[in-house]
Amino acid sequence: MAVFASGRGTNLEALLQAFPQGHPLGEVVLVLSDNPEAFALERARGRGVEALFLPWRGRRAFEGEALALLAERRVDLVLLAGFLRLLSPAFVGRWYGRLLNIHPSLLPDYPGLRVHQRVLQAGERETGSTVHFVDQGMDTGPIVLQGRVPVLPGDTPELLERRVLRLEHRLYPKAVRLVLLGLARPPEAFGPLAPSLLALPPRERALGLKALALLRAWGREDLLGEALQALAAPQPGEGGRDPWVRGAFLAAHLLACPHPALKEEAAELPEPVRGPVLGALKRVESPL
Ligand code: GRF
Image (cartoon, rainbow, N blue to C red; front, side):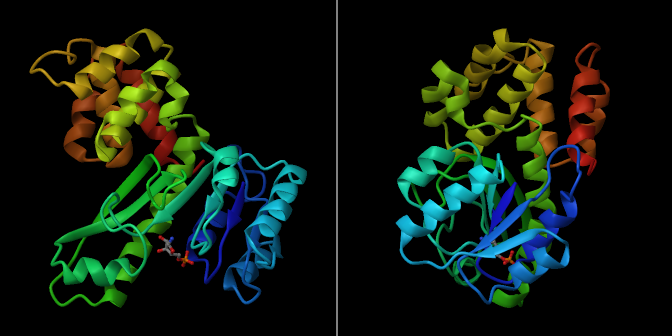
């Protein structure tokens, strides 16, 4: 994996810790920054990871050099972590499905900059962070994972930022684990089902993408259409009939938010569904 970072790099630090050299799922092998002063570069070097400053002499030049380095270092997944430049549609198109970003809000709410200030001004009671596949829009790509934190009375943008950052340091490595395990894929990975997935509201789409990826990982490709139908046009009782579909939705929820009540329900699923559901949760929750 490569990480692009422009600043202090606390998310980078969390990724370096989660995916050190030799990690069986993947390792961070390269850090690129457009800012020579970025503390992110020092963090990477401190952990023995190659860290390069690539001057921003325009998008074309930067991306050309970055693409060459990614190919040379045989990078499979690029993680944006506080990278403040916009990548071109060509770069994003080439890396689509293998390019992630973290944004400090519950997307699709509050894309863009000065998020915490806007969240406070709007009187929100809850905020969070989103890891998403990068597409050609700004903070619009398919959601991999979201986490939530409360907005507390008396919060300042700085307090809120710190709370969200603590959340992000857990959320980003977990989202990367999901992607590396093949349990989160972009809609296009589901071929003919992609248009229906894209038509769903972003957060339901995120749930559907995980449920479909789980069914695929379990070899139940035959149930993808039924699961999508249950999500797109929920009918009481319908779609919940197949225990694999129910197990996939339960697991998809649990992967995002391991609520004890849902965990109990998962433990009571009938075999042979219970094993794969609990197995997926274990693999995503455990750091190795
Ligand atoms: C994070 O809040 C992230 O969501 C946003 O930029 C910030 C980067 O912080 N994209 P850091 O450099 O990782 O500390």
